[in-house]
Image 1 (cartoon, chains in turn cyan, red, yellow):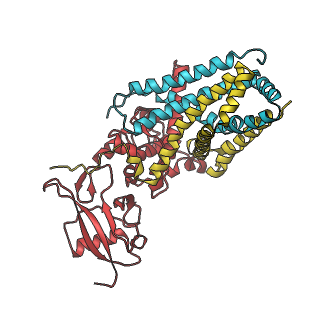
Image 2 (tube, chains in turn orange, brown, blue):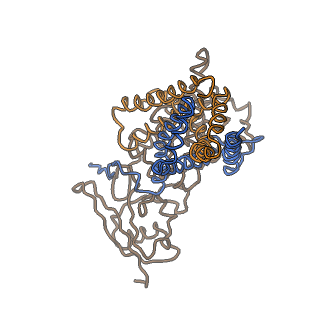
Image 3 (cartoon, chains in turn orange, cyan, green):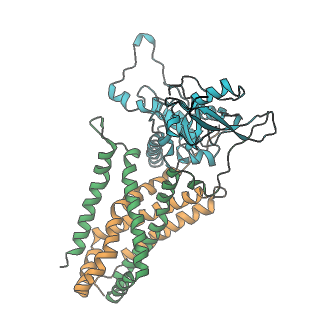
Length: 123
Length: 248
Length: 131
């Protein structure tokens, strides 16, 4: 039997990093974004915004968000690629990989752009 | 005929016939302690001697009698009629394999895949007899013992959707058995198995559905073996990328 | 000698046939909901950078019943991913302490659930203590 060398290990490592990051952090982020913020806003909207701004623009938090969101994009990209395999797209898979990992890269790049170009003070 | 009977709905196929498969119903005496294999043996002895199937030890160690029982891969020596009674029991050959006759599948493909991972201890230099035995601590044995339990029954192949979809996927048992040797401290052949293991037909073909470990009658956990192979191969890949000088 | 390929072709709905396959597909499908949530998260981050007005708009958008429904589904997906991921981690990386294998249940708690609980507590506490 002849076997072809595979670089799947690389994509799988990104998938795994993203899997851990998303499993650890996304539940909390979802609760923050969907429950805490809309409710907090009710008490003192301006203070709520300024507190959030200072938290999110703090460099350790920025790097954490970038890492979590960036790797999570590759996690979902890899998984979606394999789901499409499982649903029948098994031939001519180059465009599928391009779409999935390209999309992940786009998501990660967008996250980097937003996170690295926050203004210095709340607007 | 005893009081209770149970119906077996059995897959029939003759290669010398018209290439069509049929199902044939048999009313078999029901006994609490009987397994599906007992029912098949009764059919062959009393009703239809042409019914063809594999079996041997009838106690779950030889791996010969694997078949689909109501759509689930099982050892027929371990599938009790009382778990199905009074409903009929559908018996078919293991899924995802070509069928030779009736309930007998062609396992040549599997044997080739098994050979491709070299299921034997490989040493760079064989130790001469005078040097004595290879030492192995209980903990060293424990790290791979689970994977030695495989009886090649192929239930995992019949449960794996990747085996069904990709003909060249070497499959759960082959990878688990490769791990049995890779993790054995006496073996030095991991790099020789890497071509097969690290390919898309090897560990990377697996999408961790996990059904293989669900159906394994010997708790080998091939799914776990495959994921660990992925981790090992990933570490290896990064080592080769980041430190290309030297080593195999 | 003719070999009959008794293999119903794996049509696109093969995963409905067994419970294990169905649970697998649900786990994999969480990726779509998670991808959508990640994009939503990016909109939030951009709003925070853009200013107070944008922030208020995101809060109002989040309060919209359609958004609430979608986010509830996303939450289900995110939780299912976390739970399945933590439960499977000991299979991928079995935990050994001094050559003894830690049982998978404890490994999942130590490597997954506990750190997640800690991380969640820290994040919620940081956001909720309005200065």
